[in-house]
Length: 318
Image (tube, rainbow, N blue to C red; front, side, top):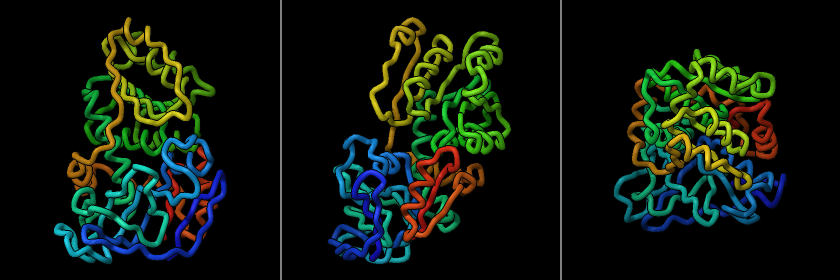
């Protein structure tokens, strides 16, 4: 089978590899679509500082595909099932940037994707799950003002969820014109932090009070300190993205304003909610995919994904 191996910063090669052997508790999945996550980009650029993996490695976890082989002890799945999830983050054991991916202990982590959901939506369900988990923790109300910092894939998923839940008072701050334009299509206020005064806009919109809930999807120190500054007293902040380096945060602001801060949850307990949102037509993740490439062009795909000014979500179709 063909697989994409990252050997070092900006060094990805598509090679032939042995098709994985399926054990009693495992399944083999033919990958139909796999999104390039921000964590994958960090591995490709060499900016994850060895936190998740060492070279060489096969990356990829935002995938959807069809089961082609089932272990003798697997009870929940059969050949032909459309599936997603089930790939471990531990020890760099990823690998969906391949024609086939091996899923260990399939009954424990693999999830079936209904026929009414496309491979693209299926591949991005994991990202939607991150947004759902991060949304429920601060639990924004329809009458509250919301600030989303960063409209990459996760920020856009948070925005789609907010709109699906009836929230109207939303401001999205995003420096990329392409991503900002996509966010604007959902009928909300967008801000270019490079040319506009975000603090002034937030305070004018909220009559000097600040927003009730901030979703920090940027993973940057400056954005997180903005979240602390622009969230009202007693407000809630959801920190979702990973940071390349540990941020220096003004904790005194957090204390003096009695705010609540929530970290991300990468669990799959709310998978059925994500599926229902897509099947009911309340959320469509397809517009988030700006580029799609065959596996053979993995290097080009990763360069595109790394260019935030030109891409939103880049996808590989093995």
